[in-house]
Image (cartoon, rainbow, N blue to C red; front, side, top):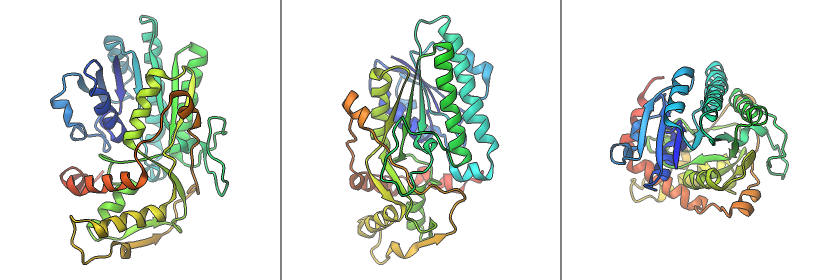
Length: 338
């Protein structure tokens, strides 16, 4: 199978490409412009696996994108390239509008041109549960029937790209699948993100910032479970359909922070004289901060027999140990000024 993966050197993208390249019959071409969130160091297998290749290209380079698509002729385009950090979208929305909306448009147009010379191409658009907005105190979960109600510039830009994909499917008969996932965590996530920030702050004995009261809830999904779902959906999912991918771990931010601190307190890799929970610091809440996200993955589980394999406790232990063992990967990223 020939895959083209945009954003393949970012967090989820690099884990996906590593997973796909385990099957030697797969061929994976990565498009990534190596922005702050993308690095070749996130996918060391690029040096050793012949079925992995990278082209340095932004999805905003419309003509170059079209040339790559027409020359490579992928069977499946997996679109993960995006600006993703909510805080950055509040400080500077323009880049999110450009990358997440115009970039998706360029890929859709390139795919439409490819469709004229190739019988089939499947456009798999990887999106977020944040497009649905805020569950608030409701006990309901997001489903694909949930109305869109994005709260941040980031989620609004992703909602827009979701709508573009569906429109190109209906208007131009471009085969697509959209996935909306919950909060990911795991190896190779940029240290500015929530869980890596907790780990990095704790081991550097700096304040661990928590927005507001810390009672915001998120559904946590280990990235390894996410990429296994993406491969399954891309190969066996229904075309012109949407799948929601969640980990089933609906937990408050404060619970997650305390869980990580407790694990660090017990870690054999750190000195014992420090209680990391003492670093927890409540800070002013983020503008428009959603209270709760949660995903109903029942369709995916029933139709494609997918289930997450990594429990939250096991996933957090694995993730914390990875960051403790791989400081040479993430410490330089913290020092970079963007």
